[in-house]
Amino acid sequence: MCGIVGVVSQAPVNQLIYDGLLLLQHRGQDAAGIVTQQARKFFMHKAKGMVRDVFRTRNMRALPGNVGLGQVRYPTAGNAYSEDEAQPFYVNAPFGLVLSHNGNLTNAAELKAELFNTDHRHINTDSDSEVLLNVLAHELEKTTRGLALSAADVFAAVRGVHRRVKGSYAVVALIAGHGMLAFRDPFGIRPLCIGHGSNENGSTVMVASESVALEGTAHQLDRDIAPGEAVFVDMNGKVQAEQCAVGAKLSPCIFEFVYLARPDSVLDGISVYQARLNLGETLAKRVVSTVPPNQIDVIIPIPESSRPSATQLAHLLGIPYREGFVKNRYVGRTFIMPGQGVRKKSVRQKLNVIASEFKGRNVLLVDDSIVRGTTSREIVQMARDAGAKKVYLASAAPPVRYPNVYGIDMPTADELVAHDRTVEQIRAAIGCDALIYQDVAGMKRAVGSLNTRLDGFDASCFDGIYITGDITPESIARMNAQRTDSADEGDVDVSRLALPNPQEA
View 1 (cartoon, rainbow, N blue to C red):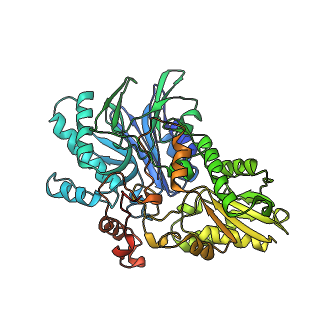
View 2: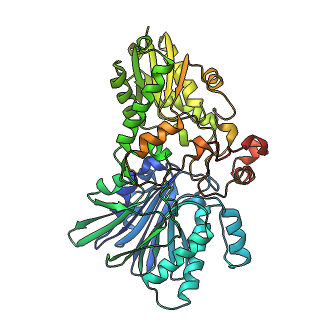
View 3: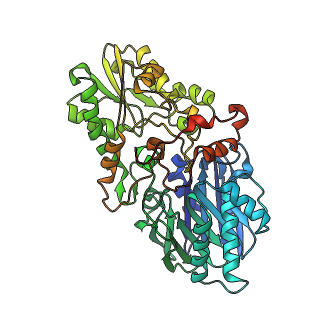
């Protein structure tokens, strides 16, 4: 999961891209980068850290130009601790290309070998985004063959990318002297939208991972970029688009609606906030079947993504809703922090309890999802320490039982508290008095009902069905082995990565 922004304007774009990245900071806190273009020269600054820390006044002044792109990074591939992995990435031929990418390539290792052995291109990092950039560069070089660039050439190159690349990818790229290119994988797993605005010098075209980046910078959301579609915006702001994939289907990642996206975003025609309200409504039925409402004194959300689900749940059950945790906004998301030790330590730094809301009460805590269980276990204990008589826990999402390979940091099965465990075993591991999960079918209905034009969802971390069709236990094991911390985790036991039969899911 990363956040990307691209802009073509008639005025300097450095501040606009910075503002857009701030609005997408929740999508990545490891590193940030911006590149701008003036004439045919690129200007880039990127480093580890959050947006406000990476860019100082001197850095912004060194980013001139009316065209640019930026990214906030949350690493799922490559070296999470290396500044060399920060995006955007640059290659000088053909034309000069800069690229930022949100997603994860599932055949990156094979592509890297092809690029070196067949295409004679050198990859200098472990990042799959650099692989994707070089695939695009090679396909663009084949298409143009040294001739002047046209939009048709760009679309032909993207068709070549789709034929070679597997996995999830939402991309924004700059082609020196020509314009901005944005495209999305044939399943639309990761989000990408486009909108327009204006300034004192004329119009602006902006693409971003979430609509909130457009609306928060005074742009109007036009639409989502379709799965498999490519959009080319020339230096004057002229927009051309073409479907570049065969058999494209809209199957976005459902975890975007559960947790990743901001609630004020609209992704693929679905309000994230309304999706979470719907999840709370379907969760209410599960709660009633597990814990009688008269045994619950208060419903308390675990900040922040669970609030809409918790409010709807409390409303339907007629149980008081209370805020029992105060969040320290200066501590990053624990879910995307590397290492269990850092994650566990940060929970109590991140959340403080309001003891009066717990003391002597049976409380139902509501979370958006339970991934590793580390945070849940700490929070349940915090509720008990504050004096709660009983602590029930409800998850607005189903059990996360399978690795995610499409750009969310949950690739190792042994890290997942629900993997190979029953609900009762998970409850015991977390330490709550009752544990209630959403069911997979209910989750898909709750979100899918908001846009009936969807072809489905990628819900692989819940149901083990990988929509790209190329994922096996062996391929997951290979991807895990490529992670930076694989040496600490040891060899991956492929037998424990068994995936469900699609006919049974």
